[in-house]
Image 1 (cartoon, rainbow, N blue to C red):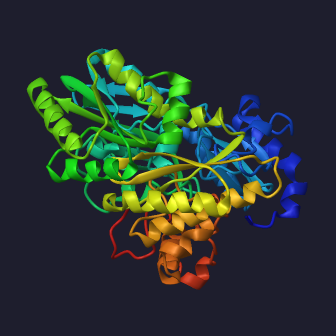
Image 2: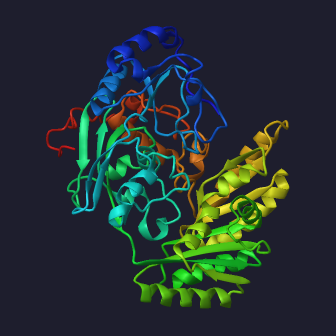
Image 3: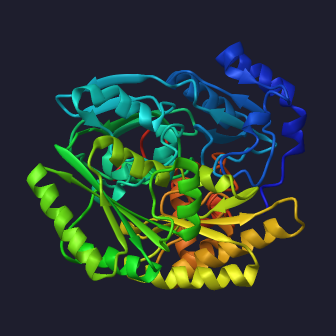
Amino acid sequence: MEMPIPNAEVIERREAIAADLLSILGPEGVIDDKNAMSPFESDGLNAYRQSPLVVALPATTEEVSRVLKYCQENSLKIVPRGSGTSLSGGALPLADGVLLGLSRMNRILEIDYENRAVVTQPGVTNLAITNAVEGKGFYYAPDPSSQIACSIGGNVAENSGGVHCLKYGLTTNNLLGLEMVTMDGEILRLGGKRLDNHGYDLIGIMTGSEGLLGIVTEVTVRILQKPAIRKALLIGFDSVTRASQSVGDIIAKGIIPAGMEMMDRPAIQAAEDFVNAGYPRDADALMIVELDGPEAEVLSLCGRVEEIVRGNGATSIRISETEEERVLFWAGRKSAFPAIGRISPDYLCMDGTIPRRQLSEILTRMERMSNEFGLRVANVFHAGDGNLHPLILFDANNEGEFERAEAFGAAILKACVELGGVLTGEHGVGVEKRDLMGEMFTEVDLKQQQRLKCAFDPDHLLNPGKVFPTLHRCAELGRLHVHKGQMPHPDLPRF
């Protein structure tokens, strides 16, 4: 894994740069002590470590603007960071780059129940939004497993999903507006509380852009009213093939559950040991199907789902009787990652997506790969939309195991693309999948994507070394630069 070669001159200027940032942000906004910067050396991927040049912690949009303007004027690279839960290395620092942490921007600014919207700073955690509005019967739908820790700004950067994204969509489907700062310090507002926005879909461009186009400093999200009733079905199967068939059959019948998750035997055992949620230990595959809405509709759908899975040979079926039991069913699934951490010194969490009809095929291939690479794999995934999260178990203390785990992960992702899927569903590309982009995109595709990058960041100062395996100079691509909210062609519309 190669990153841009550090600029020795910039590193030599570290003390002066830290002093300049101190004048902008004050003593609480700058960390330049080597030991104090150690928590920022990696993100949730935790496979690579690098100390940043200096850590900047702005508390306001204006401070973000001043920091970016300073970095632009001094040709300094910027790596944005939310809570650091990224699983693709997207927040991996650079030795000659300023790490821009947004954790101090952690306030909910407005709750507007009439327009069903919340305006929040980027450092607010995902779950905190739901906690703030649930007293009035509302919630924020996207719910990644890390929702207790991951920040809403990071969710925007990676277009995060969660166990309920099948029915309610990813982050991009629940955003109404953004405030962002461009690399030259300009503050832009995109969208708002309106249901529809005119002009180009710049919110869509920013969502999932992994910190390559600008820094998000404010987010307006859509909140939903809690459904009248929720029921979760805990369904065991004696094979992943039967469980996979049930996923397609349920949706083919026109039933769209709020969530539909699957786990294989290793994940079932680990989660049950960790949470004691009542999972069937004799099952080779487990499905959790949640249905929500009016009571009569939910009870009817529960009966239809039960009929479908019984027809596919389900070995056990439990329907939650209370809200506490429903939450317990989900607790095992949402704790699957730490549960695996109890049975393996290390693991890599992959993130590929395939068409639903290919679930059985990819799981069969992964079983063969496990034997080929000599490493165990546990599977937990969003079955409804085909988003896989294979957990590759290894011990970094054993020579060569980390390299084999990386090769195993790359093989899984290549198989996902071969079967008609994509490299990532919600974790992003970062550095983990960067060198696999050629498996999915042609050189022409990648250059076109970089032209968009050049429009926002012509000097490649925002999060360099991420996403693109080869970074071309903007002059080579034909540069189109966004400046002062306007492109250099007066006959074209303003952003």
